[in-house]
Image (cartoon, rainbow, N blue to C red; front, top):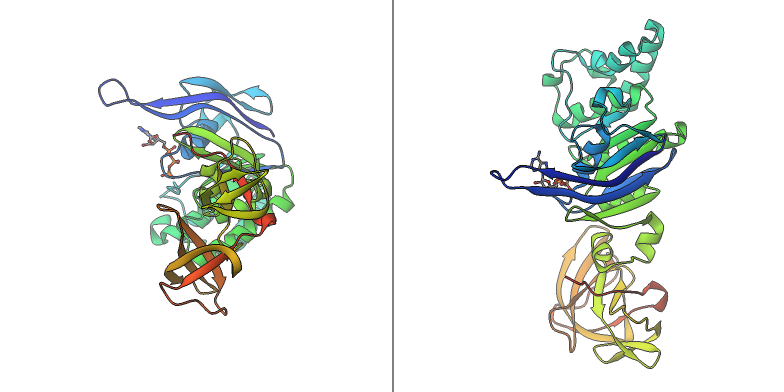
Length: 349
Ligand SMILES: Nc1ncnc2c1ncn2[C@@H]1O[C@H](COP(=O)(O)OP(=O)(O)OP(=O)(O)O)[C@@H](O)[C@H]1O
């Protein structure tokens, strides 16, 4: 089922409490079988967009369509979609198994089917041993897993997930990401909107990523495309923490701090060079600078380096942990391989 938001604007508050524009002229279309991640910093409007689709907030302007039908004026329960929000709102008076069974019973499924499906869902989220407990007897992460099981039990054509893994520890998070990937294979027609501020979740799950900032959509594209060639400086730094360095044109090439970058072609209107921390190489003949900080990250060391001749700009470099790290304060040389460089426009604000 296709999900469409057309020019959706949401305001909260009033003249007295102060008005917030949480979403501004937002357009998005998610096809059946597609997963789109809404990615952006806190307060950028991600949850508001999702709640508008679920029917929990009413747009001030614009329309919401499901499978082409205008549902803007329909209450949430009539939209027939699965929702998992940050505050896992389980029914407190129902045991775990009954929470998961709720939607199935409401849809008048046979007793045998309800039992089978509940068992399957609890198994999927690793909650089988907790089937007889009440929500108050579970940790936050366990409640979140039950909420996911409950949303998926009815095999909804549209699934809305708002930071569904936020309360889980690293291992469970990885397991649940795997389960969500499996779900996408097993229910190929499901349309998923996935709200997160974690770029690694977005990259792992989404076909397309919609990057949001200050109530607006900044960029939307397939995950691999946004990562490899970000269209804006904001997306470049938000998705993968790219380094951004000012460039000056030189002939048809570009220079950084007076140093010519072999092979990188100038593009008018694109004044920043974008390169990911893992792509920068410490080797002779590159951009001269100095190592000012080093942080051990387990599998890698993250180095922070200054660039000779540039103030206010530093370069982050990820170096595999088995490689030797220069002394703090040492002069270094940074090679920026042409295939890892892209140019983006400077921020206009
Ligand atoms: N019910 C509400 N009443 C008033 N303002 C609200 C309400 N809900 C959200 N807002 C405001 O709308 C803006 C967008 O909020 P939203 O929850 O959509 O952001 P978000 O990107 O999902 O953030 P987070 O990652 O922190 O959950 C914020 O400025 C927020 O304070």
